[in-house]
Image (tube, rainbow, N blue to C red):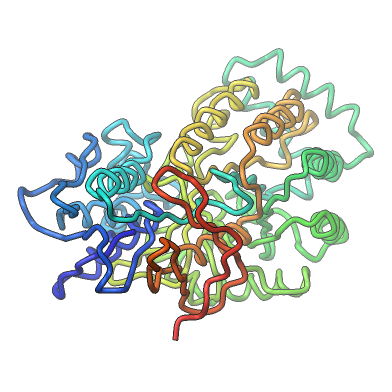
Length: 481
């Protein structure tokens, strides 16, 4: 339990940083001014530069029944978790993206470290240390007693013209010296003539996830392809085609979520994003809630403004295209930040992607990809966070990836063995928004708390003590006011 003393002159950026830290700490915020709980104060002592915050394990200051956080720390949190630092970058790569080297974590070589989340956990530890007899209560990290969460996603980039993608992939393999692997691809492609390896690959993927009992989230392109979009690697299939419709039906019937894969021209165009969202909605029977930009092509902040204007509830674009890691310094879902306030849009960072290794790093062994994915999953698990991975459904033998399907099955089995809360991104976002909005209205003499929430809540919450022992479970917060 904690009661923040928020200075009246706290800026919007500092307020965002404070809210993110409190959320990630899982500390219950108590509104009762009479209760004796740990106080959180915001101060200004020695300046804390962003580079220092990234490179060192900074911790809050402790006092008697009090924990103090520097205002500069709050600004650092916003610069990272809110992508505030990247929103000021003007440099772009050849795809119009902010180069990964402009990210503060990459510059420090700490892009695989959940820097912001570690500070939030240090805040919780400090509260526990100074509490004494004062009660400390936490909200459980995930539903169903799970201590971390995982989500697998798929970008449907290829539906039509598979021989073209096969030839491009063979050229890529030969160019990187993988001649034997290229030969295996040519053989598999020859055997697939007259068949549809894309459809077969999607069905195999759906079967693997059904076997593991894991729902996934699929992002689907929904613009009109032209020769120019083909050459750019953007739009390559028609969403209303018979094959695409069949794929969408099978994905939906398997209980998976379908979101939009925004085309290149939607990067800063809310109207085009809205048109593609509406078009996809007609095909799947309801407007999609989530979006991820194709090639992860976006301008931090400005693209998210367009996403919210187009009606989306969450964005799953924030990941590195050329390496795997924690671009926002968090292994969790956080509110989007636009530079002048918190948005209604949720940010669900992408942490791991198959092609970040094979395309950009020259790692062609799919089992090495899996080892990398599981390493990041362990990092997420250690901070009670969320792992989000991207597996492209066209990673089949006939399209250039002969060992990938078996590697995927190993990945799913290994993740499931660590018992995460597994859900679609839409479901996970719904939970995180609910948990974030819960507050403690009062603390009774028996040590129980009355929970309230601003707005509707379809989730039950579990309250824990500082040792992680369950104090109350199945608690449905009452609506505040």
